[in-house]
Image (cartoon, rainbow, N blue to C red):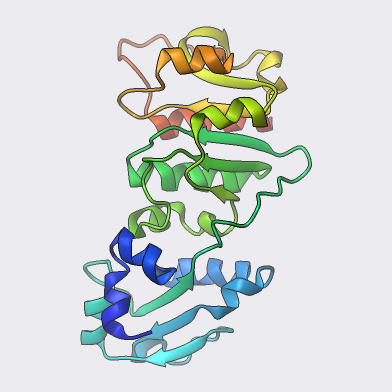
Length: 242
């Protein structure tokens, strides 16, 4: 891929058009290499390095470029000098959930840091699939990829999943609400899909009713209005994994 095209991968429309996204830095490259050992598609990634990483060992085709060229294509302000162009998954491939896998559905999540942190948590505990609604932040946004710390390679992802489709796909749906049973209750573990809303707007009440979503809450004793979305998902994932 030409360097001018790689630079375009900073933008969502070109990631979709070219079918690739960027991965930067040693840690993320190591996670990519671990994932490539189990996913042959990732072996088509291409590595771009400056002289400092000329002898980096990887299964990918490697290109040596100058520090000036690296600065032009990297998304970070002070690039480490190692970057990969990675093929995006086939969005048309059918989802094949693993046995006993739980789904985490995120409705119109907007913050890249939130999504990256959530993916990192789901990968840590394992046994989760992340479903993103239309209008959500692009999971292949470089900020999401960095915040995930490589978890994007280890957590099954589905994009543009319509909220209404959940009712035909999952028999039991739970949602987080200010009112409801506590997440510490044994019944919290009895659902197939856990629904979390947009950072500011949540999920429209009428759609929750239509889905027959069972409300649960994280009880607090402070005076603030709500928890951060990523914190909420993280606490719920912990409860489900205990």
